[in-house]
Amino acid sequence: MRSRLVLALIVAVLAVSGAGAQEKSLFRVYLDDRTPENFVQAFEAYEQMRSDTVNHGATVVLAYLAMFEMQKNLELLEQNAADLSTRQRFQYANILLALERYDEAIELYTKINEDSPKWSCGWRHRGEAYWKKGELEQAVECLEKAIETRETHYDAYVYLAKVLRDMKRYPEALETLEKGLTYYGKDIEDPEEEVASVDVAFLHLDLLEKCGLTEKHRELHEKVKKKYPDDERLK
Image 1 (spheres, rainbow, N blue to C red):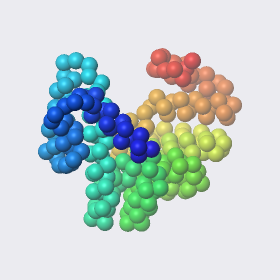
Image 2 (cartoon, rainbow, N blue to C red; image 1 turned 60 degrees about the horizontal axis):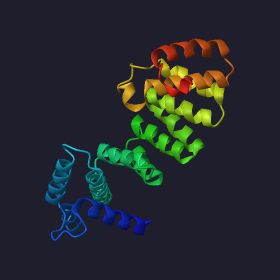
Image 3 (spheres, helix red, strand yellow; image 1 turned 90 degrees about the horizontal axis):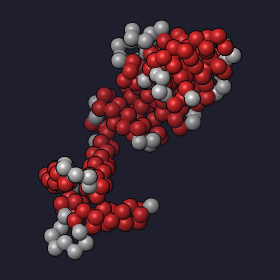
Image 4 (cartoon, helix red, strand yellow; image 1 turned 60 degrees about the vertical axis):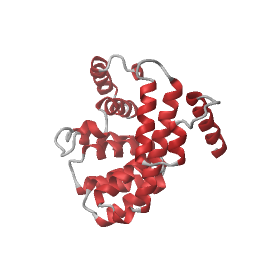
């Protein structure tokens, strides 16, 4: 895998700077010395290359620049994890969750739960990490704890419903989701920031169908079709 990455980097550099270039490309300068100044200089230069035309080579290099900078900053966060505030540790864990580094994210969320056991968000996101890892019983435990610590935590109900659906506990999942929907817009967080309403609607449809509630499914299906007519899941 590492050899493929190195090869891809060489190809990217040659594609942009030219195989016979006498001077090092700005990307090469950055790779040799990954300072903020070299990053900004390279980033601006490759952005300029594609400002007026399509330049896929420049786009490839920009993607690599972003990847290397992210990795560098993640390493800094890891090295200084003990000095992070609870919210900073939470944001770091969320990045790891998005990168599918579930074990590392769960370790951080667990520490957050230990330090701030009544903070619902740490429990909710830990539950999501367990769910995506496939450890469903642990996910249920954490998501139920999120609801226990904040009853109006709308997206905790949504994620709990997803987990229960995957466990084929359909009536419980439906009951959980519909209770959560009563808190839509009543929680302290923006409901759309965590889960899109369109996805919740299709989860609701799925659970109604799995529970055999044909009439309710038909009624909701008509509403969803009017609100999201172009969604491929309707086909």
